[in-house]
Length: 225
Image (cartoon, rainbow, N blue to C red; front, side):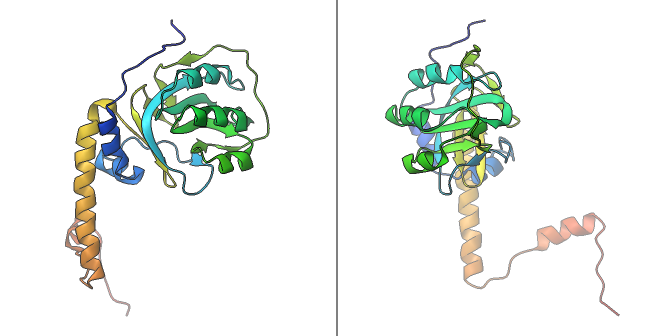
């Protein structure tokens, strides 16, 4: 097996921009409630958000050797997504690596492990999504992979898939579904805008469809005697 695949097909920047118009929650709903990454992986600070194609890396648990090569291969706008064993008790990414990511204009760093240098990372401003902060460092001994499909937070992520994140969490959009997800997201946001405008004007919420479901499920109503 080739450990490091140097290049992959990235989606067109215009297609990434179409997905970036919508928050992750909308993207998740618009693609049939698919693609949501484990909610334990959270932004390091409120307000962090990003959208970009995934450059994937897999490191052995307690080791961050492959991240250095991954950073060197990244292009501006890439999201560096690292599978590191779903281990919150390691901090294999900190200020030095974040500085390198920022210099290469990497859009975000996402990992199923801990990170450290929290204060410096928040000041630097690179969107970092992780299992939390951990002071424990990592070894640099074990070869993993770069630009192979990985599983992170219960979701398969392939190089070139789009990953988007904000305070609500992370969602992956498959690269072959980008345009249809963007179209469905736009339609959903338009429907919600009409609904909220109606509610702001004082119109009651239409609950007839919900009532029909409740009745079909056997819900009953009564008054207190």
